[in-house]
Amino acid sequence: MKYTVEISNKLNELLQRTYDAEKGFKQAAEKVDNKTIKDFFENSAKQRYTFGQELKTEIKAFGQAPDKGGSTKGTLHRSWINFKSLFTSNNEEAMLEEVHRGEKEAIETYNDILHDKDFVLPPSTESLLMRHRNAIRETLETANIFETAVS
Image 1 (cartoon, one colour):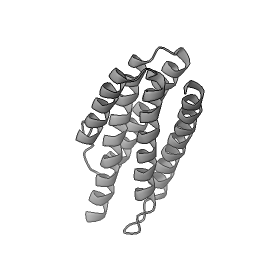
Image 2 (cartoon, rainbow, N blue to C red):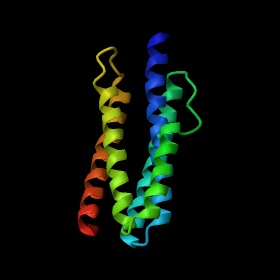
Image 3 (cartoon, helix red, strand yellow):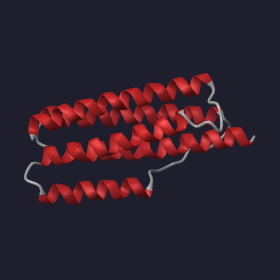
């Protein structure tokens, strides 16, 4: 029983981060004028919504309840995006810098769970987390390309 609770707690941590990322991407999309970057943010928000649904399904498979909302840290991060956008002349660059920071943290969280030696993830869970992490890496790479282009 403890094993499944531990795994679901880790997955709920990822779920919170996913909620935060989805909200952050939606907020960033509202604050930029560049259509390509706006589309990137909107598509990233949709992707995180899908990730959230997948994580909820996985948590339920362990017989646990998924968390309902984002984290306090995510709220603070989105507040920082709001604050930063007020004082920067290049809104797109500021938003992309925040995406860069958030995505790096997300990848670290996924890696921590994937490499945790205290328990072995079921193959289906490990595969799901690796797929999410790799997609986040692609988002980070795209954000870096956009950031270079607008700076």
